[in-house]
Image (cartoon, rainbow, N blue to C red; front, side):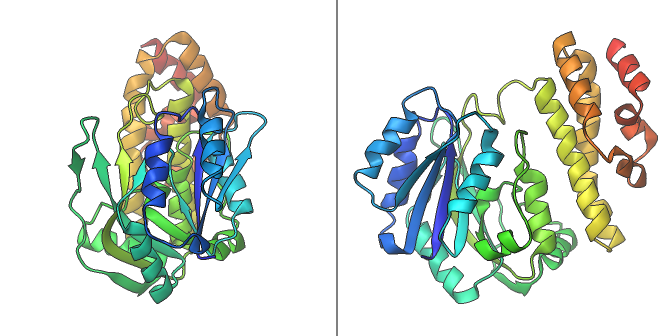
Length: 319
């Protein structure tokens, strides 16, 4: 089997029909792909919807968590169950572009890369699409770090950090122990960077294969509470650690980390806007995040000091 499409879901009944319709109208023989769905303890009719789909599609498999573990754990479970040579992580509220799967399969046959990178439409609530400004030529025969250097050299910033704009070789993920952090938000930010750092072969194709829907109430657009802000800081630290330990190109290090400095500054300004409950949750989670000292290497104390010194954090909140 060529590709496993892994779809975690939680209370996704509104979107599942569109997602599955986009997959099963691709005109690709069922023997070439499978769809693996993981129910993260949905409370709506999502589970039953997929059970009904299973009656129609023999290559659709359904697994369930016994407790809510968030998307990272669901993707990990799907990865362990997958039988395909390649993995495509698809979100339950998004959908695949017409004829995209066949085009991706052809490129996977041609290049067989560790990571196949492509593009995505951004879909708004009124169903209009933004295709963005993307690199218009194929890129092949380079490592993941060389691809990151290409981004820096060309000032190309459209490699979306989400995993859904990539297809990964399964053996590459397993051999490099590339599993998602579990129980956190934004788990794919540091994941995709670590994957590119470890990849020996990258292929980029100028194809909009995916439709990323700006869903009201999703994790990305719902209210940022103490946990979400703490997990945003977490991925900034994780990215900094990955870069510090694995990239020798000093200019590239700073190019990557610069983006996350902006995130840290953004949330430093928002700390004093938190409710007391949110602040207490943020402080508790921050205490449990290891290796914050790595930030010393790449940013000024004015940027990172509030994350290291609890007294500074408390005074910032009180201000």
